[in-house]
Amino acid sequence: MELQQFSLKGKTALVTGSSRGIGRSILLGLARLGANVVVHGVRAGEAAESVLAEAKALGVEAQFVAGDLSAPQGGKACAEAVLAAVRQVDIVVLNASIQVKKAWLEQTPEDIEGQLRTNFIASLEMLQVLVPPMKENGWGRILTVGSVQQKKPHPMMLPYAASKCAQESMVRSLAVDLAPHGITVNNLAPGVILTDRNTDALADPDYLELVKSKIPAGYCGESDDCAGVAQLLCSDAGRYITGQDIYADGGMSL
Ligand code: NAP
Image 1 (cartoon, rainbow, N blue to C red):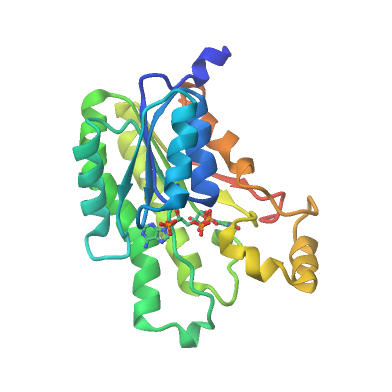
Image 2 (image 1 turned 120 degrees about the vertical axis):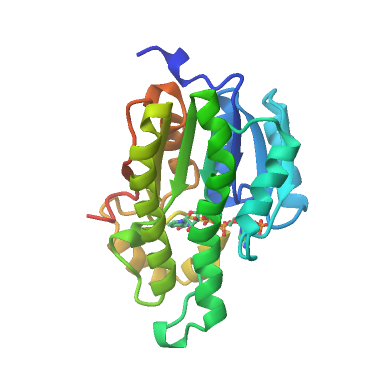
């Protein structure tokens, strides 16, 4: 194995939800390997600007595309906007998601639909647009970001956990279909990773201790704990890995 097999020079990577958190770390990890990058978020703003600046400082091309993936056909619209901005997407990381923490009996139709749209339907819509040109090119990498909740669903997040399971099922179907075309499809499932999403909840010391007691490694992860996995799965170093569900969770799923 040569380090050269990790190089992404000449490739273009789109990471949804890369204005912050795990998506930001994955996008910068791919840029460090030489990929040109498309930063995505619901809307432009300071967070997206700072990722763009950090990626450009690594010497790669970087641009921002906005898109609300919870809107009907939001995935299709977003993928089309990306292809209008860059000629080819070689690597797509489907990372954006929304999560509504409520008892399942209290989840409204809007809560349920918003989570299923953003976390699953939009992923499928995006791939319907982005995969045909990848197939023509004979090379591609698709990485979805799932969750430890695929194995250990939180009682207050039923639609969220179900949406991640649906996405992982999509990964296994597509991996078989796309393997002959040089395209790998995998799912990266994080455990508890410190991001904006859980800052408030984990600020409660009792809750933090409870969460840590469920993680064999004994601590919460950082966004960068997901970046190395993405670097492997999105490069030629990972060309023989497809259809897999890989946990970056300190052992929490066990
Ligand atoms: P985060 O910090 O909450 O960031 C969410 C990102 O998604 C932002 O870039 C946000 O864009 C974008 N986004 C939110 N709603 C969107 C929508 N409707 N349409 C398009 N983009 C949208 O998230 P994170 O904690 O890094 O999580 C990243 C991924 O890891 C998610 O799939 C999550 O389910 C998964 N995950 C996280 C954890 C964890 O502990 N953090 C654990 C397991 C799995 P704006 O900046 O424009 O709002």
